[in-house]
Length: 77
Image 1 (cartoon, rainbow, N blue to C red):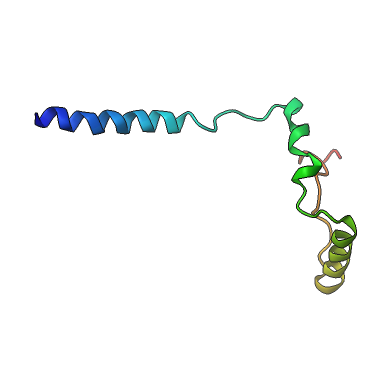
Image 2 (image 1 turned 90 degrees about the horizontal axis):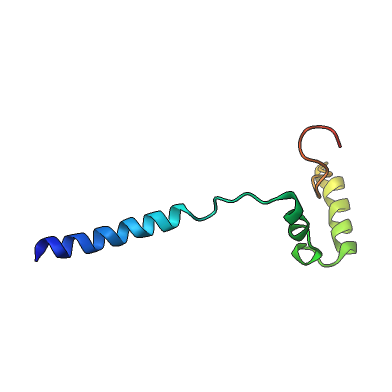
């Protein structure tokens, strides 16, 4: 009886570990990236307010840019 009660949680733990290790292993294809850049996913709904906030940040803190996707990191944009 003791061996049966030991193996059931062990098998359940192994099954959960295998299931968790299979999650999140796929990369996003280039053809699917257009859906990630959908307008619905933008945090700022009002472009005028976002431009005003950027202007304030650039004047107050000297920080400008960094908003948007300029390129892939290879320096060829």
